[in-house]
Amino acid sequence: MIKKKIVFEKSLITLVLAILLISFASAFGVSSPFWRGNPISVSPGETGSVNLTLQNMIGTEDITVRAVLTKGSEIASVEEKDYLIKAGTKDTKVQVDIRIPPSVPVDTSYVVAVSFETVNSGAGGGVAIGTGIDTNFDVLVVPLTPVIEKTELSPEEGKSTLVYWVIGAIILIAIAIAIVLKKGKKKSFKK
Image (tube, rainbow, N blue to C red):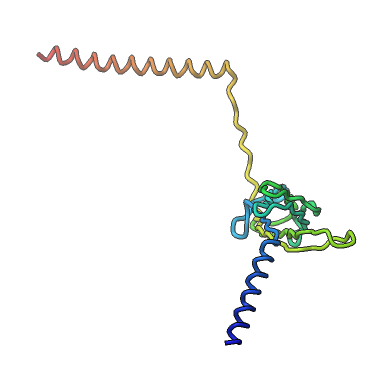
């Protein structure tokens, strides 16, 4: 009986501590329009960018995170600094720039990884690193697609094109009427 009471008390203390620790946890997230298996496509000699979005929707305290590029530095760069994520927000942007050298073969694939770690003020003015989240995405090198320039008609050219369409429609209607009338005359002669 005493043994059950001790086990119950330890379980209760563990549960209370878990609940208290959960309330102190800071919750932030990272979203990306690209991920492993859904790559951003960039051609050799071209540049691209990916906007990662930081969010802090749980809790009432602002969070500061430090961004660090951990993989893909041969083609990617990110401003490695501290980002303040206000409580209740989901729109703090972190831009990752992609630059593919001209000599990279088509169909080459890269993995880019950015790590975000919470930064807390430590005792004595120091900085302590807390929890972290890593986000990864693929970069695929694709052939350069030629740009097809769209030509626009000037207002005068547009009017003349419209005139040609109207004249063509009138001619087609006139031909259709002539055919109908000709068939009608042939029927009247046969009677």
